[in-house]
Length: 387
Image (cartoon, rainbow, N blue to C red):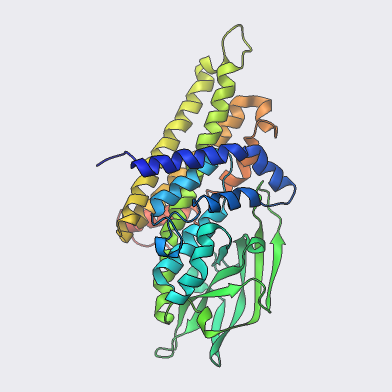
């Protein structure tokens, strides 16, 4: 057992950290509040190869794994730039395409995902289904040689920035007559696909949308994979990378908040000549948050290592635990940072309150803490399924 990164991973961490700090949280917030996207940061990260670290080299990527992509997610977040689309496009879409797409689909999409010139977002959540993908109402039916999609999706990130959306739908199995999941690559300008922006109380340059699919006609090759049999494994292929990279982003955000707060409390003097950080009422909450963030980072490393080793079942357990731990730790770290900074913590200038909405959402999405506890109770503790 080793907790050391390889020299290449260390170099990646240092390089991404340097990139993130050149932009910083003020850039991130300015883009979010002006309704713009982090286009410059994304383009530079793509040009430097950071967006494609987990994509096979034959498609223009770095040939690494989710471990490397988690490093990118964490270090950008630790610099104050938590980019949600890193989770959606390189982690989910690129992994699904790499593992289950046709060769033509891989050649068409992976190089653009690797260099940042293309983004593919992911649409699974629906208003009525919530966390239960078995109740998805979006249905794909045969339409001659192609497909016809109808349904609704909600909380879909970055549709306005992407060329395609990877839509999870249900199709009728001709052998059984039952509906089974399938994934479709849908152009965001496809006739019949419309969107409505959701107003969110989160400071983020990445927007959330409701999607409406009304008789969206697609060619046969829009179906991801060689056949309908690819649907279920393709769907699950994206979930572990999603959990792990979301956790990494949360851990990085926690690190950022603790660093900002620690710098302030080490130099802020109110009572005599001592810094406020010398008082345990200030330093202990920060130290506690730092412990929780570091514990989450260890579980993230374990989950990513298991995933990259092909141990999917174990990675599923570790990935869910990592997501839970990081979500709690990030929320604690940001809230603690705001508290120890006092009034300054609520200002935009000090750059911590701007993360409150995002870390609170991290306890809900992409899977809620309660559903993770259900998963652990059932699959780790052997308890009867409760839902």
